[in-house]
Length: 173
Image (tube, rainbow, N blue to C red):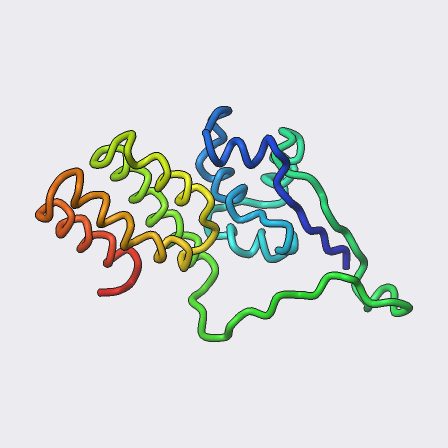
């Protein structure tokens, strides 16, 4: 079995930070997940709920947003030497990948929409941190600075209302 690992190019990182080329939202979700560590199989499993296939990876490759960083053959086909990259262990109790992707997208969109509408240009640094986040856990870490910035910009009532929405999306209930 061939296992390919992709990484973002400078153009891909710029697209995440600036949205200059306007990559389609579903492709953008895949681009955000590409980190130079996840295998092609793992990436496709994570975006299966979005209806994305290998064609989406090929589209990002053709647009030069990503590059193939590693490709190796599994030990089943070539027993002489194991691949250099170590597979990342996944915790067993984690929710299904499609649910994680949906949650990531929901929280990501919430931050993007509300940072622009409530904080404005003062939220630029926070917006960059959201763009760099590649997991729900990383987005959870932005909760406190986000709510603090909203409170400074719009007051405690708005911050409390947005905190309720954000906590629901993050699964804090």
